[in-house]
Image (tube, rainbow, N blue to C red):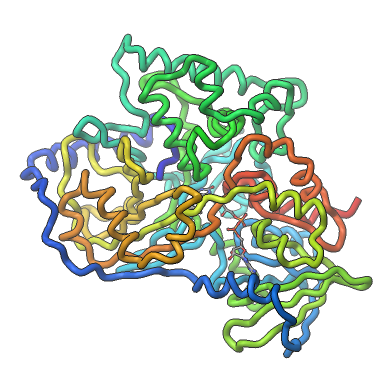
Length: 543
Ligand SMILES: Cc1cc2nc3c(=O)[nH]c(=O)nc-3n(C[C@H](O)[C@H](O)[C@H](O)COP(=O)(O)OP(=O)(O)OC[C@H]3O[C@@H](n4cnc5c(N)ncnc54)[C@H](O)[C@@H]3O)c2cc1C
């Protein structure tokens, strides 16, 4: 699971790279690992996260009348869902002076797709695991990072706290029998591949250039200035745009497909050209290996991934955060909004009435709560396609034998693999000698796999994860202590063609009545900045 950007080196990383290189030299001296898979050992582990029965309670409750509410409560603002958007919404309303903000969340702990986990005594991610340095339009994110001390002003510049930036080496790719630096496949000087890398980089640079009133690609996306070109890009797949541009190099296409699967949960045949280009153009461009690039591709990361961030968003809520509450109904009345939730701990229904409700839930869930759902919500939910994901945390008791090439990085990607690679939870630790760790492997799955993700035993999925990694780590099974996996049936909205143009999504974002919506789904794709800004905007005054 990569940050998906070609590697660039800052002074900070270069100095650390020297140390990493000596480890690489050492590892090259170790005996080559045996290619034969280890004798089969019974796997220890299982699924983590709330049982799917909770989510499905909503479906079941639709078919019959609900029992009587056992307890009735009131709130000025009630936020449904404690993902990044819900937590940011709660923070924004409290900053706006509303103290009585209560949050209902289906899982026992907050964070949504950006939750942390612990395995073998070590923190590790369950989902989202990095945050790039914010771009200009993500001003709410930047402001919060300043509050947290992750950013500071120094001689008129914005400077990140290097302790929270991903340490070097950030990424490596296994290709042609060895590990190489960065996630972009290497291209020889003068090769056709390098020429295509440069051509793609030029296309991205042209689209990134400022236009009257802002940029064509911004993050969050609704702060961009769309034009005929971006509208046309949204109407076709990325694959068809690349073909029309004559961009057909195998390595470039693999890399772009990987980047789309990594950020959007689906490949370049499925996502729009707008989305494929937005990935680079909204942030820091695309730079071919060896080309000039700055330090802007640095990312913040923590052992528990973005769980570090969501824990800090959730902390001030204390008893206002109600975990284990599955929201089943929302109905707007004359004097407020009525919400019914199932309390998993007491197995009884809780009724809430609030002046304002922030629906910070995936839109396909939100659409099932209302009877009838507002037309814009029905339309938006019907237009969204969700990618299922599998996240596997593998506790290993010692470092793995190394293949040829550069030293282990935070993010380790395998060329041509169906998976997205793995990140190392102990990468940010300052321990002198590598030891036990947790590797977090990511798989964005085809939509057709959703049923199997629910039905097939966890051991089948663990086997799939291990087989993907066997090619680079034949000794992994010997070192493996335990594997714990999180399955997301509807992990993220896939930015298919036509979504940016959807009036329904824009209408939901603009709603400023008693019921408001805040979720990454409003953008038609899912990243931290979209979710956070949607949460903040939910507290904007009524028009
Ligand atoms: C595996 C994975 C890796 C990712 N990696 C990154 C990354 O590295 N960087 C990045 O920027 N983004 C990443 N993302 C995208 C990530 O989804 C967003 O960054 C962000 O976390 C989305 O937040 P959200 O609040 O919009 O949605 P969600 O996280 O979906 O939050 C919705 C919340 O609503 C709750 N809920 C659902 N139904 C109900 C109900 N009926 N009642 C009560 N509560 C309910 C859910 O449990 C959840 O907590 C990743 C996503 C996944 C799935």
